[in-house]
Length: 293
Image 1 (tube, rainbow, N blue to C red):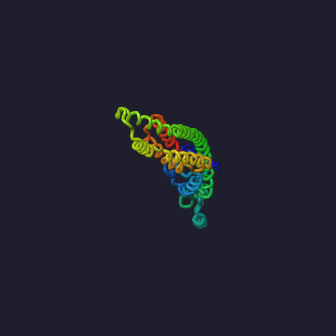
Image 2: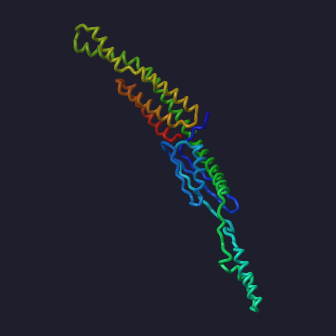
């Protein structure tokens, strides 16, 4: 059986190398489809597609927020760049002046203090290195959120299975009760007719016709059969596991339709009560299923 995940979860992961650290947080909540939002520093935007690829390979539904933080703690974030050609020309000209009898006090310190010769160049982040750090941090955060989603999904699944048993019980009670409603209606109808006719003979054909009309109007055999089928389908989907949310949500709409029909056809207090119990259970299931991926 594949894992059934909740759409709610949180995960955090980090990866560091040579004074650079990437921290990634992933948060997810309910949503009809996968809605991925990534907030990250501009200098890391080249890694956005990689983050999307990793997350979407494991998460199929939900609103997912991803927060990327970058810390650069390197001691050397820039390097000295010397214009060697220009420096050589300065030295050459200084030597020419010295040969003419001028004092040559042009040394290394003068060269290093000359901004035309020496400049600071920011060390750019290597994209491959940064993508590697982002990938590692994303996978750690993803593993955490999947564990949380799996734990929550397991709890929801267990509760759903318990509620499905509640549906089965209500179906059984309604099914057992249904045949007696026809008999009781027939007896009540005879009593009312006797009261009205006050001793006159009852038209048995008319009575049978009325009972037949009532039986046809209140018959819920088809609804009960479909509900039993839905129960088996619920179990089959859950046992298969994986991304079950949409399938269970559709099935719950169908089950609710049958429960409504039973309630509307019922003229019996016991069946009406059980139909309302069915509707209540199905509604609770619907709320839980909306949190399943």
